Image (cartoon, rainbow over all chains, first blue to last red; front, side, top):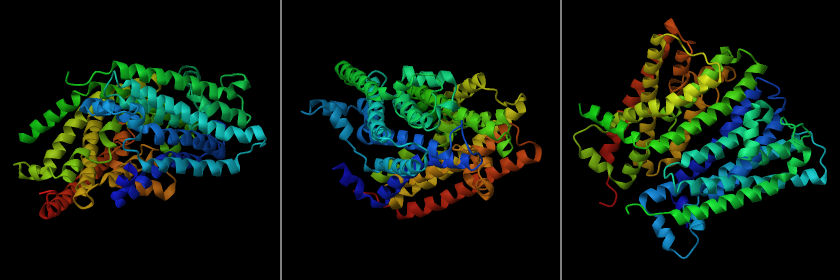
Amino acid sequence: MWVRATLAYRTSFLLTAFGNFAASGLDFVAILLMFSRIRALGGFSLPEVAFLYGTCSLALGLSDLLLGNLSRLGARIRDGTLDTLLVRPAPVFVQIAADRFALRRLGRTFQALLVLGWALGRIDVDWTVGRVLMVPLMAVCGTAIFGAVYTAGAAFQFWAQDAAELQNSLTYGGNALLQYPPTVFARDLVRGVTFIVPLAFVNWLPALWLLDRPDPLGLPRWVAFLGPAVAALMCAGAGLAWRRGVRSYRSTGS
Amino acid sequence: MLYGAVVAGSFRRYATYRVATAAGVVTNTAFGFIIAYTYLALWSQRPHLGGYDRAQALTFVWAGQALFALIAYGGLDELQDRIRNGDVAVDLYRPADLQLWWLATELGRAGLQLIGRGVVPMAVGALAFPLALPGSALTWGWFLLSVALGVVVSFALRYLVALASFWLLDSSGLAMVSMLSCMFFSGLVLPLRVFPGALADLAQLLPWAALLQVPADVLMEARTGGALLRGLAFQAAWAVVLLALGRLVQSAATRKVVVQGG
């Protein structure tokens, strides 16, 4: 239904879909502009940075397509429409995720795939079966990790009703971080996104293994394969937080 | 008098969103760190890129994050909604000018955002990185004037986008395109001086340059004396032109207004 609704204002749909495509592409344009002045950033070439960009942008794009609407939870709590969803015989989580399902969000995914395809053809990798399989695995785990962040962020809104932006600093901020090589950043920042909010498993750690680069933190190489376990743990944690959030919810105006 | 009250009301209104403001501060600070490190990597490869030294490049980053909430908005969502659902008809009957009314609310919002979302990221940036912040109060004064002019230009652009709702009904797509142009051509993505060749020259003539590039240059004293005055004149000229254009479109729109559903 929301797909048809979006298509009703055709000029606007085309503009927003293009806008979404271009908005996420803007970061890549920034990278291209930077590389018009330099040959390597943090020791990484343009195709390598494009590979990092493509993988994290794809993961964010997919999780945003599926769960991006959860950030509207705060608004729903404030205007009281969450109550409507609670009395319906379907999981609230699914209802919120599907409400106002925004087709235009495909723009980011499409753009990420384009950059990723370009990068895959140009990075200097000895493609074994394991390395080839690592790329889709990264996309799946990355989507799950960002999805967990969306869910946890939404659960947090049950307590702080107007904090959608806080989650943005982890999703969009994480995306902005992960599209550059880890060598660019201060050690403590890299440690933070490895051990505290393990966003580094979206693409940094597997990509370092794929590109045969040393990890700036000196972690053993098998850490690159922990992606699925980390993603599963994060999803479980986010799920618990969500359940607690729903249970503790008290409607407005009471 | 009336518009002064609107400014104050708008300021107070946005002051009530404390958690949202705090969340915004966190986001802007996080982005500030990320961009600052990428700029450090960039400037370590090419010192004096775009005529900035390292401290100036970092100052640009944090100025951008401090001003982000003031300038980088796609449209005037509320006005757009009021046009789409017809409430604007009520606004047009009010004994206040539509454009001035919304300019006043924007100035109130910008004032709060500057204090609420601008000061903290800038202070954190100054603690974490060596910034090229001016020592003289006069420069800070020029900077604030330049920011104010930037806010007016930003408003004038967004007002035009919102008025497009009279024809498009849903101008959120246009708002998005407008926001993108704003992100790209204001310098939020990369300082305009760092753009390659002719693009750098072109970008510095467009109205978006008034939003961040000019205020940031004023702050880091990359514009002084004649260049400072030229920068402010550039901003003021775009403000006048765009506000006048807004007037024209507004009168065309109000002549054709048909209230939906009535």
